[in-house]
Length: 157
Image (cartoon, rainbow, N blue to C red; front, side):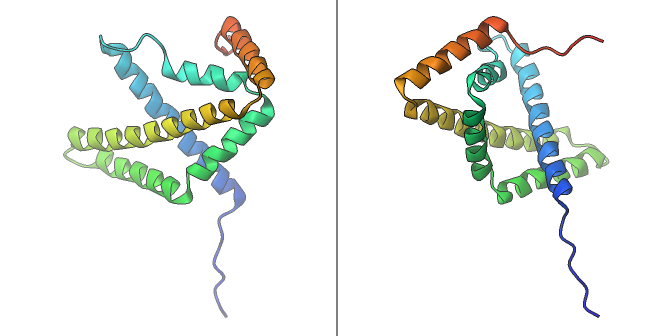
């Protein structure tokens, strides 16, 4: 009797993508904390900036940019991301603990995250450049509305 290869279920792929997204958020949080401790930090919050632009886009435009990002963030890149976190697990459990090795690994992960952010920024600018003047004016109005409304906040229990 031949063995059948088990293929990963769809939910495991979704779980991996969600996990990678959460890890990217965690790295962003670490970067944010580091920037706030630095006296030479920029006077704007990069994550909030990107969030406002995305909130101002129509649903269809967000989907189009998301599709572009998924095509950029290939399976090989996701596998490299996962390997990086697996390496972090090894480093975290190592005795003696080598904080310098973990810092180097996290710097590499941050660099990869910044490359994806740069691609996303370029994709957004290209998308906005391809819009008609009227659509871009609608986007500007939506951005102004999002700016006045402020950041989304979680409801207090």
